[in-house]
Length: 77
Image (cartoon, rainbow, N blue to C red; front, side, top):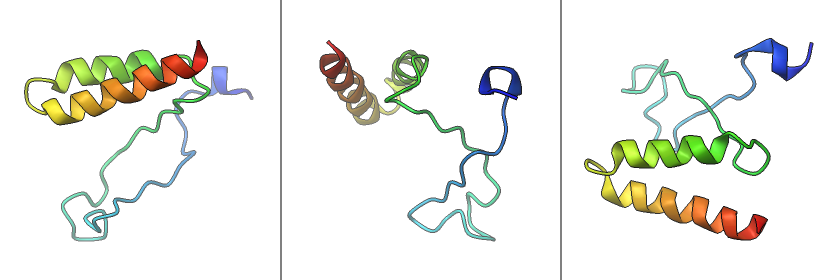
């Protein structure tokens, strides 16, 4: 079965570096979705949309994400 017909499946194990994903922590059992910014052509538009969505509340994060996708676009050109 290829990835195009498989849907979502457990492919990555994500842990927070601040330890809050440990049992009893604020982020214990949180769900995460990982994007491959290098190979997935849908990842860059998704990051742009996320940056636009969070821009008013988290302007520094949005700016960082803008720089990441701009840098990646420059490398692909």
